[in-house]
Structures are given as structure tokens and as C-alpha cells.
Amino acid sequence: MIRVLLVDDHELVRTGFRHILASSDEIEVVGEAESGEEALEKVKQIKPDLVLMDISMPGIGGIEATRKIKRYHPDTQIIALTIHDDAPFPAKLHDAGALGYMTKGCPEQELFEAIRTVVSGKPFISSDISKKLTLARLTGVDPETPFSGLSSREMQVFLMITQGRKTQEISDSLCLSPKTVSTYRHRLFEKLNVNTDVDLAHLALRYGVIGNNS
Image (tube, rainbow, N blue to C red; front, side):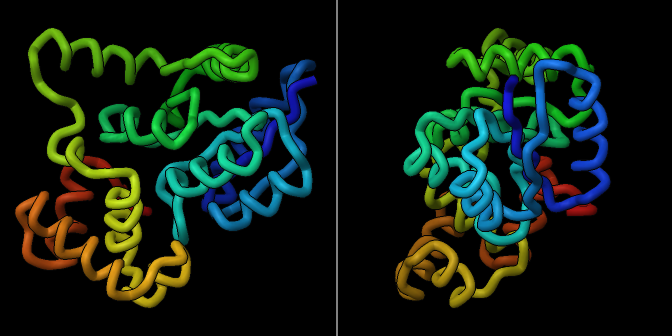
């Protein structure tokens, strides 16, 4: 039996995935979490085989939660979930330790295939995202522009800024000094060619990093 932890800040999304997974006799949902912080605690308590991890959540978010889970619980595999098939995250999540990358609208059978594949230690990318990446390679267009130049930590700070988090909140969540967070903010402004936090949020919306209902 594959033991799965569901992580998403929307209860309806978790309910939907729970009902889908309940139709499989080889998968058991052993817990749920609505934030990256709660996911870390649940993984420690439950020790699931696999985590279905939402990317865009309040708090530390899915990328940082993935990185920390893999650091402290390397045997737990992770499939990252996004609502956008062109969100600029595959490389960032791979670096963080996720083996799978799926859209929330993927077919049920593809989800089951992804879970079995990732639990066996092999990578899996959903077909819709894979097509986008393949097309980008063929056309020479970088699908991760303009975010491909960001480090994992810069990406995490970027996501938290777009959530409206203040410097001290980011500092406390990521165990960084406020000065370091400010340095990351100015670095983001330079790399992404913007001037304000509002500009960062608009850029995130434009490229599907966050949704209008996030």
C-alpha cells in the first residue's frame, strides 16, 4: 500500500484528490495539510511514502517545504502540483528534490501512474507539461524565462513577497535576518527588472506563478 499525504491550502482540492485516490486499492491517503509548515510536521509524524505537494501556498510554500522534507526525510518522495501547465517551476522543484511535476487537471490514470512511478524512485512529468517543455526546446524558447536565473532561495523569497508577506514574516519563516531578506528583495528587483513588490506580484500573475484566486 502506498501511503500518501495531501498538501494544499484549498480544502475542496484536497477533497477532490482524496476521492480520486480512494478508488485505488493500492493507495491510501494517510493525512492532509494546508501549508508547507503543517506538511513538515505531518511528514515527521506520519512518515508517508509520498507527498502530493501544492506549489503556491501561504507560508513557506511548496518549494521550500519540498526542500526541507527531502533534507530531513529523504525516503519520502514528492510530486509537485500546479494549476498552470506552463508555470516556471520544473527545474526549481527538481533542485528541491521533487521527482514528479503535475497539473491539478491531469487525468486520473496519469495521476495513478505518476504516484507509482515516483514511489519507485523514477521521475515523472505530466503529459501537458512535458509537451510544453518539448515545444520550448524545439523552438529554442526558454519556458522558465524570466525566472530561470533565480536561485531556489530567491524563488522562495519571490513567492512569499507575492503573497504579501512582510520582511519580518519572511525572515521568521525562512530563518534569515531581515537584512538578508532585503538583500534578496533588491536582487529580485534587479534580476526581474522591476521596482516594487506590486510589480513582482503582477509579474507572478502574468506568468502563472500565482493565480488570481491564490
